[in-house]
Image (cartoon, rainbow, N blue to C red; front, side, top):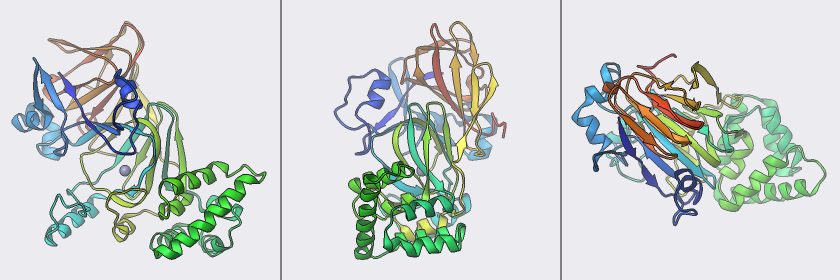
Length: 407
Ligand SMILES: [Zn+2]
């Protein structure tokens, strides 16, 4: 096991305090800090630190795939780490998006290759052949939108705004309060020509302001979000789109799982994110990045759902696993009691990150101390590792979903 140095990524929506505070660095930071990548992604790999030398985790795995990945992960996913772990800190909403299924990713990747779209082109949708299920676990209150909610609630929200121009959509949803109604309304909104869209958004915003000046409070939170998003992304179809989605407010320790086709947007907060090692994102708005509406519409799952909360299930003393169906990854939270050794998942390639307190990792020959924000690489060949602490501490451990697979 070795110390792992993550790759810090600065995006405009990032926080200047959350990651710096977690890591005990001066805060606010000079630039917004959006994501700390702890993995072996070719775009920004983490570095293994050993005796003062730094080696890319990508190179470590390429040089010794079997000892890095183990006898189950290597044949299942090839000579690459199947997941990417991140710390994510959002101060502003970041892009309305969805990810393709495995079949859609394979088809899209082949199609764009055939069309000769360079792999690093900013308009390329499919950067690889993988799906990208993802799980976010809140480290602080974390706000997101995820999946189409019960259309009846959306009808009530739209009606509460008392905007005549919304009546067509209320009628549409009331006539088909299901997948087909949601598809019709969302598709109409997101493909509307800009002048019509701007006119509709202007009326909706007027309705929002009037609603908030009234006495009813039932939809105040949804309405404030519409205004907030319109302020950051004026004229964006996402301003209307958010009215159709589940608002999810996670408390620290709660998780959200985003399966293929789930339309989602992270709004604000600090979390640990674990996903299949893929870059396949289809965006519909709320971002300066590449948007491809027809492609997004092809992959979206319009079936209304409850918020897809991932529940941690206790699987050992202080050890809980967030249940997801993804074979590429499994995320564990380790609550370490003072003076008690906690066993980490023992198989496959693992990456741990300390989020609270000071942790001591122990394997059969060595120890490694981690402070908050620090992480470590535990290759498959490492075998069993325990974690202990003098005071209460918390560690997250990413593993594959095959070698450690309960599901
Ligand atoms: Zn996503």
